[in-house]
Length: 275
Image (cartoon, rainbow, N blue to C red):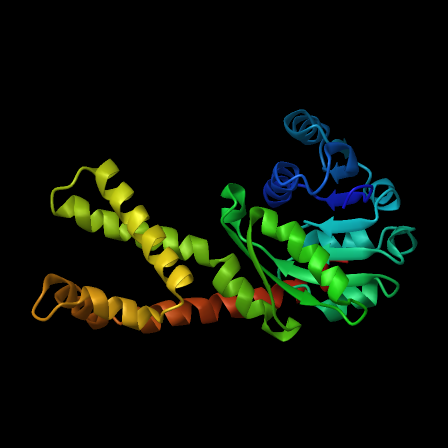
């Protein structure tokens, strides 16, 4: 993407993670990225850490860019995009939004002359282990999707789905790390209860999750088949599995994603209301 200029609006934790990934992968040079922040102190810190240009002026950043990444909160995105001159500044450009719950229909209505992509990354992007899912708008072709995919692959995995599935993606992929942290903590608590030092229990539990996840991704085997490899007859693992089933863990986790998805679907409505 040499010579291409990227603007990242509302560059907070996720935006900064993406900046770092792009620079490490040499997809963009520092002088090809401009970011925006809400406060001068945030702008100064971001510029010092990454060497990119940072401004408080969203409109100016959009005018100077070829591609624009909106890392704005759902509650702010409509207000920023309805700033006078913004629609014109983004006309003919690729605009990628990570605002949870804000649909492609809304984005296309606000930016009728732009090619819009909706994206949902998650916080493991901070360590280049993120999961990002894209949905393309009606004016987006394969080349634009490929460019967006390349951008997000600098901080993890990236796949594409239909827009109607993005709220479920938000509930599972966006919120999912928080649910996993709770499970890691709970398993470590069990280890502590049985005598393990807290630090040791946490390290074991976290590595168990990382190793199990990599087994699923790298072998492409169904989790049930991998589980069966561990559960020997009359063994300790099947005893633990039955205890989990007694607690209805499957339905609790599935309902957790269902509820997170429901709330995600409401965020876009709030964005429109806060215009």
